[in-house]
Length: 390
Figure 1 (cartoon, rainbow, N blue to C red):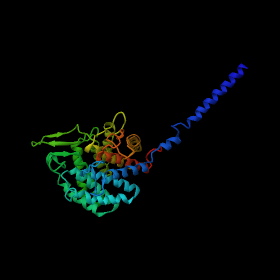
Figure 2 (cartoon, rainbow, N blue to C red):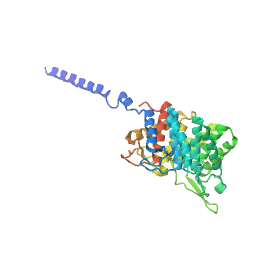
Figure 3 (cartoon, rainbow, N blue to C red):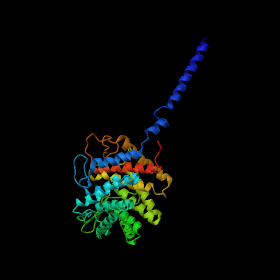
Figure 4 (cartoon, rainbow, N blue to C red):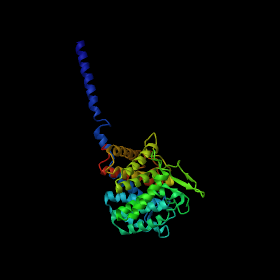
């Protein structure tokens, strides 16, 4: 009888154990539940880009307000990146509402500057010329190309012999030569060359790129220094402590353009080195998210890096191991932002992608744009079949 009880007890323990094993298949880590928890990136991008319109678009004036809570202040350079997000959304959906905003943007933005796209800051003009060139290539409207070329003619006037060359940061800073006024110029010139075949554009693409690489890049690790100041005596002071994600992004973008034109591996290697420096040095050590570069202008910096890292990911000659590493990094940033850092009531973001904005928070347009660019990038990569299924 005693042995019979032991036998029955053993069977009972076995059944309980097996039930526990079976139960694990229904745990929160099961593949079915992981699939249910997976983000629909297209839907997320719809929500994100629509929120940019709902919270910031000034339909009466034809530009994006600087704030989401009544601040209608006009800032020129973020308008380019807002147009880029509209282009992201239009290319993904073909929804005509985005095209309508593009046309209104084209009328409204120059009106805030005395009926011109020209500006005192060379990088501001470069951002907007890049966005307008992309608009032309996306929708085929010649007005965007005409304005791009007009702005390009003005950009060229920023090149001087001070400091051995380079485009000035602004017309009122003739002794400041910046990475951010030269790398985007190289990207723009490369794209105009690819569109027109005119050699002058390619010459400009090379010389602006070479200026940055020869003066403002640490060739050992790929860091891009912000700018150099040239004294009246010709002494050069390089701001090596100022290293920002957007300088990394546009330098790798310029390198990538020249690689696609020339096929020379040194350019692809430069792009990878710039990207790797950013992932290794401009991320938060605890979360592996891109660093918080604050509000104001800094709020837009990492969105620009995301745009050009995404272009590098899509380069077919990139090795699979490098591509997978970059994809995993962007996917982690996007998942964290969407799951933990988004105020879903208004779909608003903060300057650090792990922090959810409070209800009724005022968010700078620049900050919102970086988040919008990241979510659209995730949707693009997902559409290309590069993101994980979980």
